[in-house]
Length: 427
Image (cartoon, rainbow, N blue to C red; front, side, top):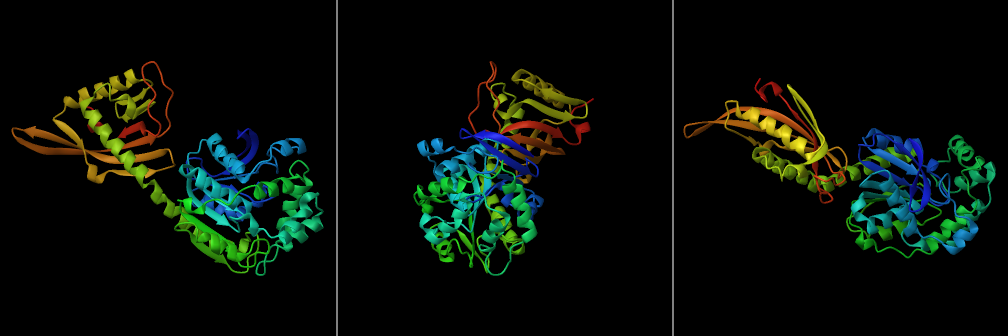
């Protein structure tokens, strides 16, 4: 999917890959580079692992908003502003949290996102990046001056050939196509981008890396001619619990040949950060247990907070869509009255076998078992077990006259399915 969205008062061109219900991975590219520099050989394996990948053009490059000379002189931006661009892009895409992967300047932006907006970041992967702008030596900055004018194909290939390190030579056909897509198309290449983004780097103070509190992976090339390798080693020590991965012979790029080594490291990080979801899973389970109590008590004042409107309940004789609090109460009253006609006296949730799975940051599936009992004299016997599956969503509906706005972050039931429904409601 390709589109342009409004974020932080600018237009940002964005492309997405995979299913939007999967955990999001935000890719942030570096100085003077467009989203096209995230090649398919890097992001497609991430999509195949079950993630929703987002690549976009930073401000002043590609199809996103360019600052004209007067606007830039009056309102120069920093890496913090570019971090806000990224976060508001996630908001525009209705994404609560994302794994953030940044290359070069994109990694420096990603650091600031994780520090300033920790609630929006699941993990941080920094590739051939820097923390302190002094890591960009004067000679490396001078080499970037080439892009202050529209380069020829020969100049473009010569520049990237100087950056690729010692082990993986430049893929000439790939970068020739990149040149055609990103430079020959005048609508995508901004010759003022380097000046503006270098200024953004220069005016941005070194972030307090000790404040980083997300799973972090740092990938650096030992043959990087733009940023010294020891810089990554130094700033990794400042990030609590960070992992450092050395890419032998790699320069200031992400060659296809290194991906079979770095993808497993990235996937381990993404899996590791799933532990951050454990609290959410417990919250969903708790909400489900609370719901089961409300279900048995059927208190009208307690029912609405546990449901999205409309909600769906599916059993054999009943497929009910409930559009408001009154309908929710009515359907479940009908349901409970039918249950009371059967031969059991009460039902409870088997909490020991309750399972929850996060489909995304705001959607979860909960499955469990309802145990039904019959009381004969003073003895209570188990009659049957009924499987149930419920979908929870964290989106908050607008307040209505009958249902007040609930607090942010409350998990609510969207739909419920009763398995073995022939036993759910007596004919």
